[in-house]
Length: 67
Image (cartoon, rainbow, N blue to C red):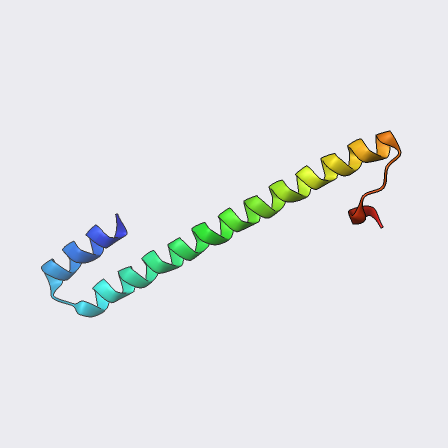
């Protein structure tokens, strides 16, 4: 979407700087998406490990994460 806007803006104005600025915004958005995805994966891993630890505590077992 942003790429299309950038291209149309460039075609209408002839200003390459506007196009480049839009491209930078697009790259920033991609970086934010990757970071968000990574945070979600880390959160899911943490929740999963906490659930395993809880089950093991209930069984009286100790995991390497609890030591």
